[in-house]
Image 1 (cartoon, rainbow, N blue to C red):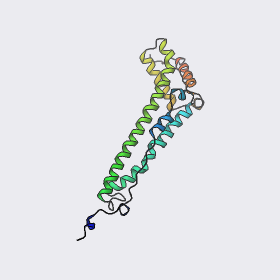
Image 2: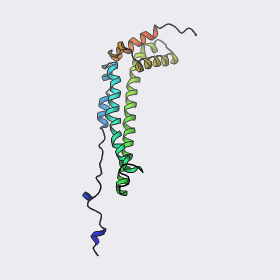
Image 3: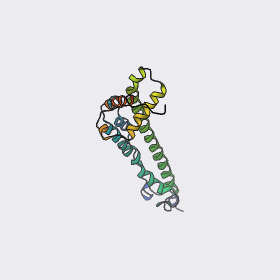
Image 4: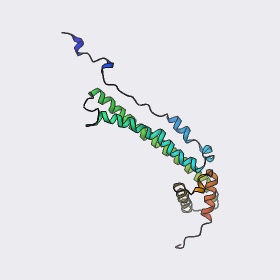
Length: 180
């Protein structure tokens, strides 16, 4: 009896196992930048940055995740022809890529929001020093957020410190609500 018959097949005879590369977390942090870099950006650049971060570090993982899913999900394109070893590999690949996508999304969001909060705090500082209440400062945040979510064309080309200074001035000079 020939014992070679029970030996595992050579690596070249097994299914090709693709390993997806992950984006670099250091590059992500570098692209987000620090507070000083954000002070030099326009609102348009900051809004575009979020899209670029998502495209370069989060959605780029969707294709390899979907590829791995085809090997491990019953009914997937490659599921029926996959060996248990291949399914195990792609399950690990799927889990690692999914975790990485969550990590990159979380880091992007947290650092991006941290920069925004720092900018908002810097802009509100003179108002806070004049004795503004916590509620008033929270309303300023909501006012700033509204402009960042629905900017006017005239706001897009302003550097962030100037924009926030203008917005604070606009907020302080707005007419008082009638129902107070």
